[in-house]
Length: 355
Image 1 (cartoon, rainbow, N blue to C red):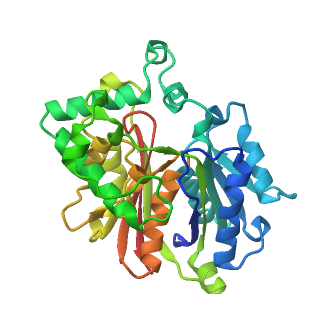
Image 2 (cartoon, rainbow, N blue to C red):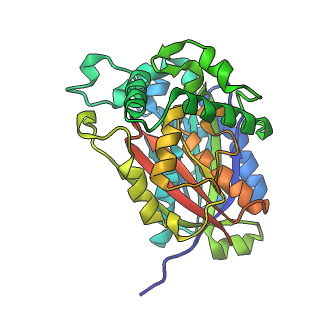
Image 3 (cartoon, helix red, strand yellow):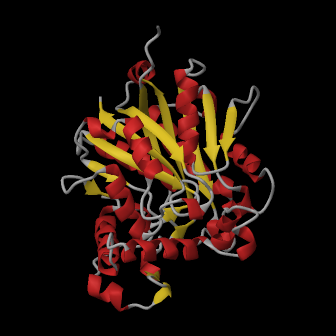
């Protein structure tokens, strides 16, 4: 039986989190990140990797198959070795890992991009809801998250003060993040003094939506050694999804995250850092509990998406942030998380380790 190929992350780049990218189109958001990751590995263009996969959302761009325009950033020439996922690019990474493990590629380029400022994001994301029972109610993702937060508080599993503490810590961590949209010292009391947007959520409890892109290159360990670049191992990765019927879920828990973490092997060693994709402050509390994280783990040292939420790229960026800390020698092992769908419906967990 052939041993499963070890996968290495060798390059990562992320744009600044911009509240509005102005006239820049998606290709212009992607290009600088592609140039950056090619430069980190010493490649010329996308033709120097075996496979490419992107993540984006046609609903945000307002047109069917809108992601095809992003292929222009590759300078694509036949034969096309490209695929796409209609969601965060963390799942594009998952597809590329499968491609390598099946022996169909030795290297892959992943990128994700989004320009959420073009429309009303809560309305756009409501298109992910059940089309028969939820969508006709015109409920949006912020309202659903508020309902989840209220349930969490009523069960005694969180408080508005604890939620504000998540935000304050994230913003303080983000002071060291050059790409952050929001950062700085802020007190829990000042956050609690603000009024709610949708009770119990305040504006500060909702991740600031950003335009931008991120990109990553992965390959086999043998290829990484051939290229002579530092790398981090992806020792485990898995994703699980829960039913679209919110009435059948316990919204105060995330069993899909727990199952993905078990399959990825989170518990097999200490976790120095965890980068969690929690678009709302209370969701970090749910995720930390589902992952079994203790005080020894630093959560979202980059500030996480509370510092800026790159739609369709933030999940990939969580993995990239752990990669950066491993290759810089700051940590030995970290966990990255990505989510999609309302109220943490679909969750991906990856474990990265020092080679």
